Amino acid sequence: MPELQTYRCPACGANLSVTPNPGPTMICNFCGTNIRVPDEWRASAGAAAPSPLGEPYAPSGARLTGAALRQALNDWLFRQAEKQAGMRLAGQPIVDERISRAADKALRELGSDGQTEINLPFLAADGNGPKHFQLTLTRATVDALAQGDQP
Image 1 (cartoon, rainbow, N blue to C red):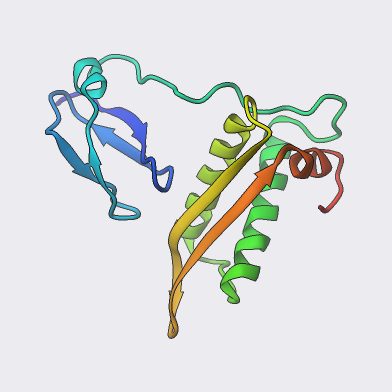
Image 2 (cartoon, rainbow, N blue to C red):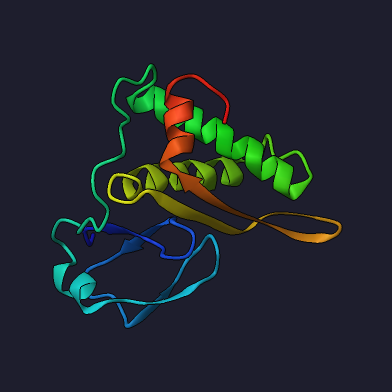
């Protein structure tokens, strides 16, 4: 059985599994984005996956760090997504997974940048149509969460 390598969708951050010798394009199972498979993915299939993102952001002197900070950020993003969608999102595993991945990705991006964009298209849907989640997350917001405050 071929060894799988995991990469992330540039649109939603979902894991993409690439088998050795992948074709020129693939489709994200979460958001449906058609992705051109970069040459380095094909060349490194079977090797360790490259990580374009740095180490996760960790505020100094924070009360919450590591997994506790990731959980606080995840919970805060979930509440923000519910506010934007205008509907309850609890109990939807795919929503939980996408927000959790976005939180992890955001913490890594904040390791090198002062802010990052979170964009989760088609996060949920109701009778009025699809619900998207977009937010600019700053280090100041994560710092507040790390101190146990609600930004």
